[in-house]
Length: 217
Image 1 (cartoon, rainbow, N blue to C red):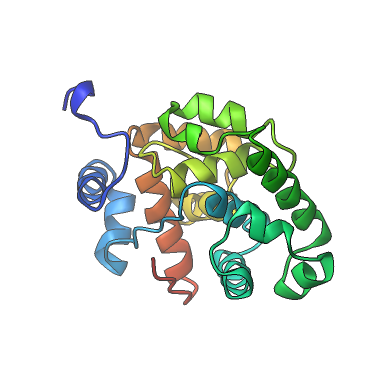
Image 2: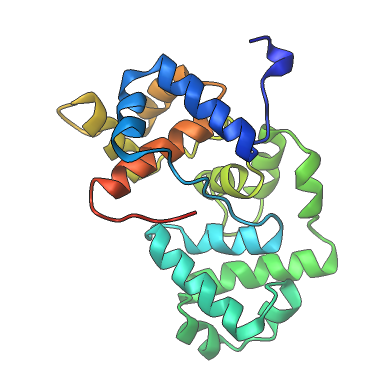
């Protein structure tokens, strides 16, 4: 496949293409697909809602982050900066936001509302530019920026470095004596270019299914 024909954005069609190519290239990933089926095409909405769920997912399970996000939707309907800023701290705590995460999202909501940060403008940037822009925001580090690239912008080659579940899945599938560190996991993931975001979903699928936690898209 020539570079010009490699998709940079995942759709249902290109996602399946990535699964097929990775399964042909890596027997460990192929075994996951054979055992558990295709991984769900997990995605999040772009823009402010995607930022919110990316922050909620910091250091907690996907299920926990989604549960809090759903409670927020029930509280304010459409998740936008105006609605979020209208909530008092106590209401956010009841929904499931820690004080720190509430502060992070409030700051980003204010910047988005005032135009100090253009979330929509991220859509047209390349991965590095998106990452560099996002990490300038308080509360967003490299993992959160990569999670936004992977889930909300659906970039085909995004890789959330430092994700513990991915590192554990790599250890299990490769039969390693110890969990690889982030640098080691990143080096292994380089083999899956230009489909690292698809490989990540396959690895998460293994991690969850192997523990009896089937999470739909």
